Length: 458
Image (tube, rainbow, N blue to C red):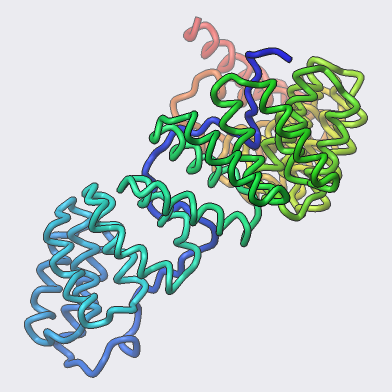
């Protein structure tokens, strides 16, 4: 087996970066927006408080702080003011002042998630990771989705054993994750003691030979250190102990592709894509790896299509169709490309680039009725995109609907900003519309305008 092999999907190459709120699940953000959410307060307090919210909304944080200070003088016990002061000071990069007010808010409401989250944000932005750690420990008790943040902070505070222990717990609870494997990799790289890591994992395997995660972590360590043969051997040991293991295929599919064992690679892909133990992001990355492999092995196109279907159905996720469309587009298989782009567009209606690609392909294939309908649908989403007006106008001309083409093209011209080439294209289509309407003088006028713009540009 080649020593250059790297396991990229399961054992992904992550560069560590500190990211606030990068974990499983959503964090609820509570914004005070009505008087009912405040305690018993005076009219003057409300006036200052809501003025502060207005100023914050337009990013005038100094004025927001002034108004909040006035509100605080009227009611020092209203903890939401401390929270808002913290947010505005954070926005200005004044983290020490933010921390002062947020700590007061925390003292008043020690289990308020939003105050704790903003205080965590403060310490993270100011890179005071030792202070952030106990805050996130409290946050995690309130909301388990902060667990990965806690792992992150254990690493930053060099509490590596706690980080690994929590990662193991989260893997058991939530299944394997590329993000958490990236965190695990940071622990291994920062401890920089490969022999100790290997010895520790081997001991764990001996103590509990049916625990998959220890085999997988050992595969990772071997792979990261260029010992691909040992990594593959460890994967085979796991299969021998647990022939029904699904997680092992996160490593095996890469081994098989490296060795050009196509049938085995496809089988591993089927297993991991159908697994409930593996998260969607990891499956998506694996499928992307396989797509690259098929680019070099076109005989596997049918298997690729099958695997894309499995992923889409199991994860209720069709974003991979766009990648598959691009795959066939690059192979100049326009019909197949269009088929998968159309599937992608059913769920990705906010993707302007995808709309444009589908429209241009339909134009090339001469389906002008579809271009007309689809460009109209796209304009409902992107009403100020001049290219869509041009495309629709062109299709209407091809369909001999010249009056409609004129209307659409004139309307679209209003959205052109300093683009002579695009303006020239509009004039050419207007000229064609006027020819179709038997207005030769106007047709000639716009033909000349188009040519003038082209000549000036050249």
